[in-house]
Image 1 (cartoon, rainbow, N blue to C red):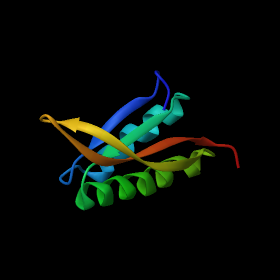
Image 2: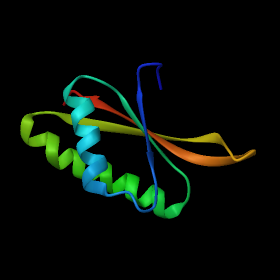
Image 3: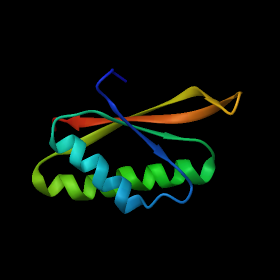
Length: 92
């Protein structure tokens, strides 16, 4: 993740279609996106969002690649483990 990467926090009640639209918009503009999710439901929503974003972008000739990693996130004085998905355009 770079200093110009747009960080999107995904919750368990996040709409995959809305998150996918945000991903696609950033990728169309040539920007990197990172999705951050804590917990299994949020991670599921993030993965679905990435899949839907591909559905939006591939017909335009743009594909994406996703690089997941564990990150520690401070939340209310505690450190929680999140999964961050770095998403960027992929030349295929």
